[in-house]
Length: 609
Image (cartoon, rainbow, N blue to C red):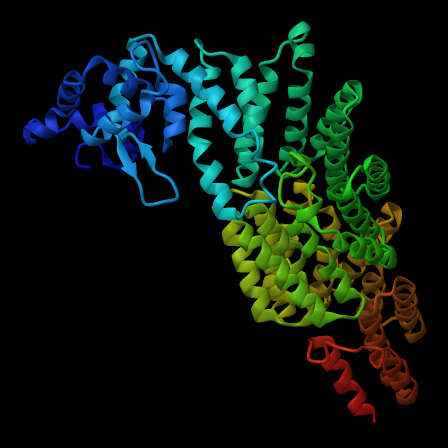
């Protein structure tokens, strides 16, 4: 610390031996001569143990007996000999062992590894050992995606998660001067599920781009068509979840689909179509996403495929304001047993758990259709399932898309605050920029809902600007625009509020994004009322909102419009008509009577009785 400072030490950590032998001349001899000590220990080993220890240096983290046998055998030691030699190295404290888990795991101390890795390079064995490690990783990761749904999160991570450092080592070697880009291509393809289950989206994007750049046009590209197709799918999804890259995602999926069609691979076509649908929904291209969902349904060959197709159709129809159709496909989706419908060998079209996503989707529908208590339970179940999965992207999805809005809508602002805080912390910890932006928008919206528009409005305005750059969450921009308009209206800034609402209505109609349009018309009535417009013009907006909500089967939104209409009617002295409007909607509810909107409606009815 005195010699280098913290930043200097951080820079020197890649050369641990130099760092630990370059201390002060007044240091104890054992601190000055660490390299000499390890060299002496290494020199005292029989040549066969030296050979095994050198080759174990390619493991960046922990490894098991099978991995050691696959990589460390050589001229003097066969694969069968390696376990016994490994035990000798453990006994001599040159290899550390952890025997407390489900199976023994081994590792080299960093200083020991740095020394023997140099010996491996000097012996000319690095390329051979790296190729063996790459071959082992391709085999070891072969079933990783298929087992995402069938293993628990802990079991999956125990089996596959520890390979991440070895993947990084192999790829660094593969794209070095002495490496082999073809091996790098194969390992990159094998590692895609690992990156996604660990939510390492940035690392996946960088690695996939590097692999694609390493493939030259011509015969070699044709030879690796299947691998290239898989890379384009991974590229598309990485871009979809990366700030500023989303507009590039459809092109990547389209390229993957083109290759899949040339290969006449129906399963690969389905996965590419699914990815294209993800990008289209995220970017607000709903008509195109409906075509993709229908195409996926035509490619469905088993129960799992139909499950996914129903989920796709439910989501797209929801976006387009067809809540009845969305609920029908959501119910069909939930009727499938995902665990038993998994085909032999698993499906690779998922990059995060579909069973978690299935629990998320119905929550919003339930609230809008007048089942707020059921919606809260569905959102809680989705969050619990996502948390149990250990998958950061799935948990961000559950919190950002459903838990936060449901809790805000039902008026449980304390729980909403907790969910938003968890979302922000999780997104920041895992480097998931789009979800961090989403979380900041919800934080600002919550301030507005809590009666602090002077703080919430500027934050939400900035958050919306960022969200538009993300491109992944176009569907939710309209909701935040509505909340921003509410904030401006609370501040008496009706001109700004009116411009926001009218622009949002026009945009929703143009894109056929009609899921929120009933609320926009209700907000327009509120804003026009604040502007001092005639009551008939104001109430026309409320009636239009109620009519649309009725057609959509959106009882909760119909109640909100009815409450706004009731307030307007009372202001012009029509108490009887006002109560009739509200009562006709309120008494159609069968649950959720302690949520914010229903409590307000009940209080209004009591005042007019």
